[in-house]
Length: 397
Length: 97
Ligand code: SF4
Ligand code: SF4
Image (cartoon, rainbow over all chains, first blue to last red; front, top):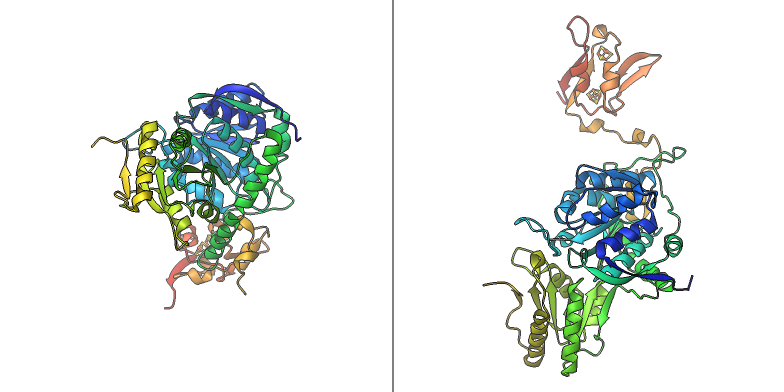
């Protein structure tokens, strides 16, 4: 190791994730197709059929069954992965909690798509945000390279002996899943030795040591198990950082809990997830050229959210605009905004904050949306006055 | 039994001790209690097979009385019991009467 040995390719986000799965070669995968995630498993099952992956592929009749089969296979002692989007994730809902509560390191590639109704197949974050509190790890990805890199790292993170937690790797539907980008694949051997052999913990198939999964835990112990889950979640961020260090050695690419862009000396900042961060960075550059000190923060580890580190990175700003690609209905702010506000809650002096909801159901996020937000932030920083705390942008009145 | 704190629990609530259901007594759930009428019993063992817990004791291939520590009073045994000539060998009685 220590030597970079990749291959430059032009692929879609889905292709990149399927390639990561082929290289990891999980023991079992159970999946059901749903746009825009379908292509991941379509390509991966082709690898399996052509003998390029040894995975036992279970083609089930629904996502509920897909996650159930993943849970069974993981409890049996296998390395397990699947993929879905939107309603598919929603249909997995009860199983998501069972996977995390049972501490099974299942990997799920989530291609973010808007929740129906109205029926829509395009990218937004309402699916992932709906599942943010189910006890899984969530890594979010700006582009195909990050989705591929996060997929590979997620196995090491989820399967870490101090954690044993399921993990979701998120990327934007169509914008990333179906767009071709230039990126780098690692060597098969490098990925294989990076993820290593799967280590089992209490596998059902070890008949010398019989175990039972899924006991009834009532008022006398349920709360202790939840407290233990809160504790294990608090250990995730250090594992994520350690795994990122090892990953840098084989890839040359650096990852942290979040990415900051021109933020250190900034006075105003944008916080935004996934693909729209790319567009926003260009707008940041343009405003920097005009002498406006703007920066950006893009969360990567969204669950568990690294509250202290994010708060530390943002607290020096005069004003922040959080852009959400999902709304939390009920008169409140968008889900990302609420977490960012919580990171700053402990500080006496804190930035002024506003929230904009953009890009729902795949609505384009344009450079002008980022530019308008930055211009407004600059004004807020100057006057100390916020006109609108929360609004939808790119929407017809 | 002293209850464990959250730091002492097995991750994922996995039970690694086989047969530990013996320690879990469900008798206190009972609102109705099955009563065995031995003279109507044909020793068919339906009750033993159907009981969801281990409340039917068996010794030397013969059914003995109920173990009320484990009987949750579901009534399945009484329903399934064929009895002798239409006379049930198990009847349910309300608890605390
Ligand atoms: S009432 Fe239910 S639990 Fe009790 S002995 Fe009959 S079948 Fe078993
Ligand atoms: S089911 Fe009824 S008849 Fe059969 S063994 Fe049990 S008590 Fe006796």
